[in-house]
Length: 609
Image (tube, rainbow, N blue to C red; front, side, top):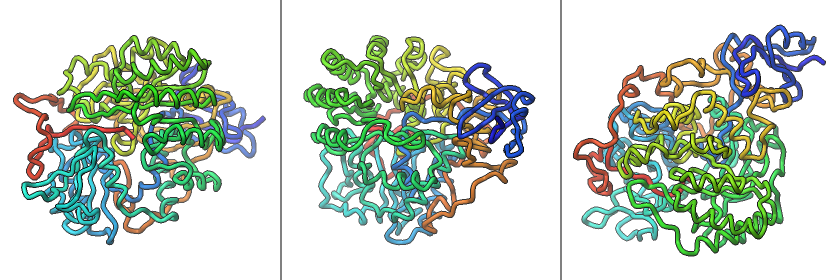
């Protein structure tokens, strides 16, 4: 039988055997053959579409095992992205320009994807600089997990004045007269930050649809064809899933999504899951869009925080009883589940619960896993393996490694997380970003971190024993991640019978210098053999361009990831700066906020949600 589509004359990494081929044939959305050009071109028929790969490198479509694309899509057109912007001066210029074009009562939001260590200046903006850039338009700037900076207009918009009460788990910082300065501090979690962000105006339903389509196309631009949505705060099921469900019904969804259900209120988690098990089930949907299970929040009392500048939090005594009730219900109903866990101490207690439930109701092959696991021990990796679980890792340390080193030391940082050990012990591992509120959604930053062991700022965290070669890292981002949506064997490899998801890259991932990995993009992305993004020499194959709405959206002017590695020729990236300078300290990170904070006054706390 002739193929519907043939991609040939390329360097195609299959993630299988043989590892490299020249051509693939695609029919009905799946790979039907892979091999040499002459072999595959024999499958050409009169209706076959043939694409010349022009000797470019082709990889299986990237699959992020943990991000928040549904919420990210709903807000993408509202957000001014600093992802990849090389200097603070440039970031502030964009902020000033966007403030001038943003109509009242809308805000300018900078929400995630950046770290001060990416900037040549190596610091965050001051409140004075933010107010100078935008004196009249409300501005909200989120910094990692630890703080948000609001200008005077934003403070007025949210009603934070001298009489504003403090949040129970956060601080509205005040000057000596009791007036809010504009700095909100997470103590210990980021609820104050996210609750304040939620006070801003939302996009209309029509603009949310446009925003989601543009965000998914932005992911396609980077070669992402699949993602597992880990739920998140202020992402209610089923209401906030309506836009992506609509795109799926219309055939306009360009990223495969498996979504998890995340309860929104403490003490109501079990009730939520009891309700959800009545109205939906894991796997409901299709290969493009389906329900994946529970988490990453299962019980609020079991969720630890990521502020590496303060002491590790101890979970409350009720953790075990509340978590056990949820886990028993999920296992009884055969629901896969995932749990956010940063520290080994939290993982230890969760595993005690899991083992107890398993003795009563065997897990028996049910897919479950931990997210993050920065400080997990070998013993607890063994316990995860024994229970048939997996671990989804994200490049959070690429954005926060400097903070971890200062608090815990470079030696402990060498295995945060111990990815090589996880693989050696045979635990399923999937790679991702935890985008978009903190880490950038750019997958090549995560691949760079896996391969080099370096932060975005250039600090080397890991020795050779805890980094991966490029083929290994790619497998974690493709076949590895497929296990976490119970789709192993279905996608992640360009092999006969698997879904025809692929990305033709702008440069050879396998041979370019390490620093250039961060600048990779796709020039042709396919999902199920359908072209969802094309540029450069493949631009004639591109789907129709999408408008941007509303007209003042930052996306219209700046797009998404700025790809700083193309703008900076080795300057800041070639500097390997020490994370701890002589005499420096971040212990007093909550002071001097009206002046130059400098790069060492910051922390990161709260959920990675």
